[in-house]
Length: 222
Image 1 (cartoon, rainbow, N blue to C red):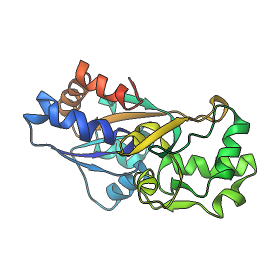
Image 2: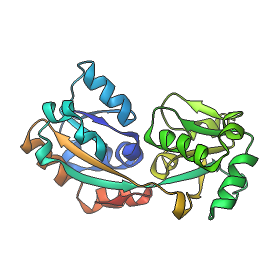
Image 3: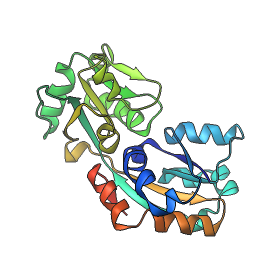
């Protein structure tokens, strides 16, 4: 089975669920990880997997409904946005909007992903907060992928992404979630080419071990 998966669940899938799950280990499963926007582009180019783990709005795409049995789609997890620093570095306070703004504008460079849902939202958020010009002047913008890698190689000292994606990178520490008034949650859902495959995946991701792995990466299992 070939699966396309969004980055929000890459950490728990790659590091915990795929290696230890009885169902996944007994089947030949290959997973490609990319932002949902990139996965949709790959579908349009004719690269069609057997299953898709994506952010919920993607199920409304006509091509997704054409290729997959979207009626048997199942929820996987809910993810929120957060900030991270390299392990051992100072954690700026980010609990309020005012602290959040100070943290972003004081950072040497803020890393975010251009293609990911988190980066798309972050771009609109800093515009709304009136700090876009200041943040963008020194930002480290990744085309896609895990933004916390820019903390490890020193390109940035603050990274923005889904909290589960930040935790997927070793050697970094989660500073905290976005303030409640600025937070945006995303639901990850699964869908397959047929109902039986969707049901098998739903059950494999709904075991106690799988749910525990999702929780350990800051996700709320659904």
